[in-house]
Length: 291
Image (cartoon, rainbow, N blue to C red; front, side):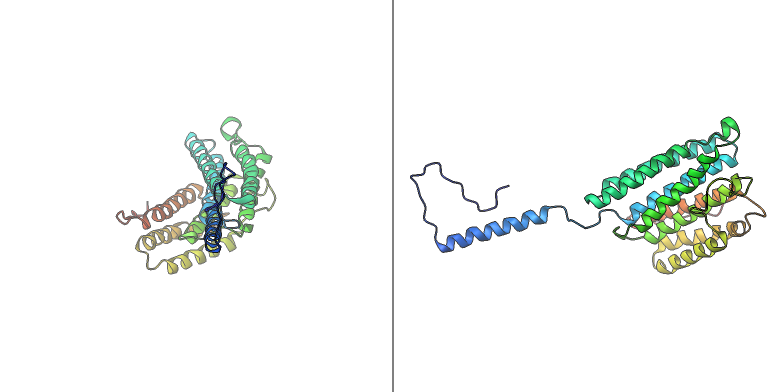
């Protein structure tokens, strides 16, 4: 693109123009201004377009897929939970598409491309639950479902260039809760206590995970104490958490997968609703009683 202030060359070479020093200064100033404008219009190099919200949304979707895969096994291939699994797979694909569209620069695009490769393997494994057809699912499929989301989560944790935003801690809280539940359902679905399929990659120890979640919840309540909608949502989460806490701690003694699955779904939905409504001009959300 020609620089601003660049003079057209006359085809009539018989016509010449003498430029004064003052005119030269004006021309150079315009050229400099044009260069600065051109630089300003270029995509900013090194500035992250991927946000923590993008990453947390994708991670939450990954743990939802894992939870629904194992819940389908617990419920012996029920059509209802097969539909839930398909829905969460579609949502994870959409979250990855949004992450891909946000990526700018070679580093971010390569990062998303690596996640996409893992996701394709994970999606195929998640679609491989054969409990309804065969009464069991291949151990290698279960291994992939257990390990791949943990591998992707580690890659996202290692990505340091994401931009931060409001409610990042709430999204992280949701993802962590969903991860705990996916682990609980993994154990409930496996007669061997979840140890028969897969390594220790990404496994959670509930002795540590439960207090970690409570620490995150209390920190969020303190941070958003002045946010009416979010405070209400977090209080609802805290109430429902009390109903499933002991089951998380003593999951080997009295497994209640349906209760854990249902309450986690309600808590995550409550937080997602609060995030979407808290910053709008709509009426403040009202969250119903514990079901």
